[in-house]
Amino acid sequence: MQDAAHDVLKKYFGYDHFRTGQDQIISRLLSGLDTVGIMPTGGGKSLCYQIPALLLPGTTLVISPLISLMKDQVDALKTAGIPATFINSSLPFSESRTRLSEAADGRYKLVYIAPERLELPFFARELERMNISLVAVDEAHCISQWGHDFRPSYRMIMTIIRRLPEKPVVTALTATATPRVTEDICRLLGISEDGVLVTGFARDNLRFQVIRGQNRIAFLKDYLKKNRDQPGIIYAATRKEVDRLNEWLVKEGFAAGNYHAGLSEEERASNQERFLYDDLSVLVATNAFGMGINKSNVRWVIHYNMPRNLEAYYQEAGRAGRDGEKSDCILLFSPQDIRLQKFFIEQSDMEEELKKEEYRKLDQMIGYCHTESCLQAYILRYFGEVNAEPCHRCGNCLDTRRKMDVTEEAQKVLSCVRRVREHYGKTMVAKVLAGADDQKIKKFKLDRLSTYGILSSRTQRDISEFIDFLTAEQYLVQMGGAYPTLKLTEKSLPVLKGEARLFRKGRVRAAQLAVHNELFERLKKVRKDLAQKEYVPPYIIFSDQSLRDMSAALPSTDHEFLMIKGVGQQKLEKYGRTFMEEIAAYEAEQAKDPAAH
Image (cartoon, rainbow, N blue to C red; front, side):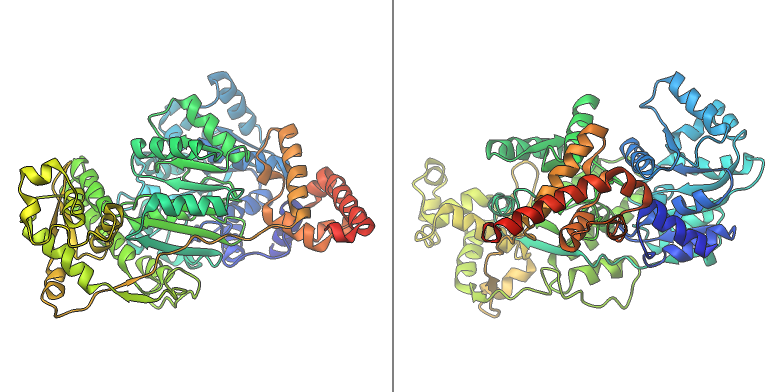
């Protein structure tokens, strides 16, 4: 069976080797053993059920949480020559009935459905008519209330499986399951804990970075200018913040769009599609966007606000670099994000036990934002990898910035906060320190304080940024509602007394991702033209990794083209000639005038 699985891998998907864990999961499923697969995003989870689907008799039912993900997966399978379909609320009732009837007749090897469909009695009865040999539960963490995206409909899966004439093999797949969530998945799907395969959570192509105590907008602008043509996602915590950032990006001349639950379904679908089809290079979104988004060439993910927990963060950040190419995952930390996330927890209607669990997870997320050790190792330990080694590529591992002694400056700021009796916020404290000629300051007699004007050589903006730094490093804390005031923390007292020194590292500079060569850019254009003709996203034709392989190997025969990663027989027949002609044209131009290249 393993030889047959390798043949299918090469013929349909164009790969010579399985990734870590794929062959073990596939082997178990082909042997009829129920299996939980925990693999990092981009680790090739979908192949773990797609290959058995082609080798097992009958149909594979894939339970997947998002409509956009289903369409993507089905488009990719059809492009590879595999009969597949989806049935969800985006289809008219008559079309759903037709597809369900065709599925019962064995017309498809894979049928994708949303978990909510299992609650419809008519649908459940129709499933009993199908010859289902495998049930694949994607994003399986959704079955557990202790996970970060609980979906009650997932609890119906086992009920439906028990009603089928013959028990199918069951596989549950996810990228973000803590040990507690994994235990829940096994219990609720009736899978033995011996059937859990964890391939590790590490993503070797991702570079994690946390930036705190800096102006977020200034960093964002610098980063996007340096990586203008690289597609990426900016996550923000609220709809208002998403709209504000999107408006600013459009004004700055970036091809940006927004995505959140406050937009109409048409607007959301349009912006998502424009992003998937490479017409937008930046999508600004709340966490409503894209669980399981399949766009393989997202080169960076920036969190403008801190998420509530590490599971959500790793899931969202993991949308970068699904094709294995080097990609950035950057979190722009601001202390007010903590207050916002606490507010969200308090306002939720969760039971008290769940709220306590959410606060515990939030503390671990805050710990990630402040750790000076390896960021990836911190994440891996959270998911249960106790002996995680430093990655030697994250922002902390590679941090060579020089430390500057800012004790005296910090004492002035902390002293000012104490002198105003912790009654004012950042803006007013910065004005007092700068010696601003301000009516409010005079009205409240703050110009008579000993700290008035002691930082007059600095601009208010610089002082505000320094206050942000002190808050990010937990020497100050913001308290209160809409107009928070600054308070001293226990950590600030030794600095005020001169018993401890305080150091600040230099500003983090935005880095440029890989620069592509001319042939790569030309092949990208060929890919986009083909994608527009076929009404599919460009990455479904070929991934960036495949294009990079082509621009390095310069294939000129069918055999050479088949050696490119991601090229199967169907794609060779469909697209090989077009891409090889572009490569030949490029080589001919270079031969005529090598100096021009």
